[in-house]
Image 1 (spheres, rainbow, N blue to C red):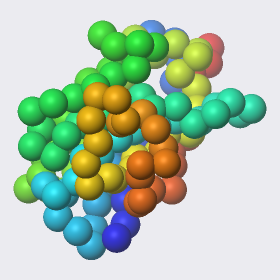
Image 2 (cartoon, rainbow, N blue to C red; image 1 turned 90 degrees about the vertical axis):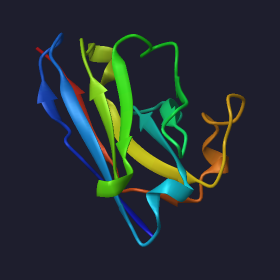
Image 3 (cartoon, rainbow, N blue to C red; image 1 turned 30 degrees about the horizontal axis):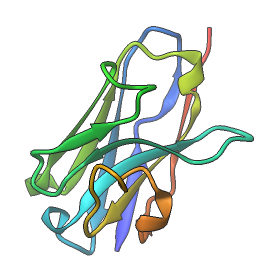
Length: 125
């Protein structure tokens, strides 16, 4: 089971980035996928989750209205479209897979068994 996150980079405030998480070794349609991030000196934070059927998604208050999560099960890929980036969005972004989470658990990293390696997003002028 592998998850490979990519798409990070150095960008200026206000611009957009799209992260991708490609999974292998399992069927994406069997898992809920969540994006987490971790900034230096801070705890890992749940950013956004998309349920296995793609019909339900969750967002943290800090990104709601700016980030959009989507998935293409046929391509084994989950995306995180990040618009209007703030300096506070600077972090390493990870994707993680869980068999089943819900509105009360999706942001808790202990529910996730499979993790990608992370991609750095730096927002700076």
